[in-house]
Amino acid sequence: MDILFVFLYQSESLVVCDVDEDLVKKLKEFRFRKATNNAAIIMKIDKDKQLVILDEEHEVSFPLSDLSLAPDTFVVYSYKYQHDDGRVSYPLCFIFSSPVGKNQQMMYAGSKNKLVQTVQLTKVFEIRNTEDLTEEWLREKLGFFR
Image (cartoon, rainbow, N blue to C red; front, side):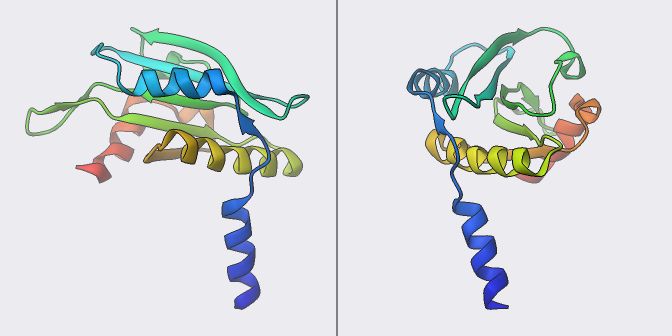
């Protein structure tokens, strides 16, 4: 039992790639943006530099399912969420899609932890199949944060 705990602890604290300083600044600005539309920042890992970097930015005026996502990307998504009681909130969602290879999975998992801690993200969702990325999927996930 102790070995399992140590393994889980080490996998949670594993950091493989740092986060680009310009990306950290952009994500902090993104967190406090005043716009009320949906928007996304898509990130990837530069394996040569071992750095999480900006890949794309989107003001999203199309369905979430149209956001093309590679299985080895990170997304910070600002979503206009209409609650059942009529309130509107703008949660900042971190969506993580694991790559297929075992070594890549460890690199992305460790880098994901660093990114989440650096930018202080709280709504972290993993998606196994990028085709499942729909507004319904996201609303279901956000339903736990009422």
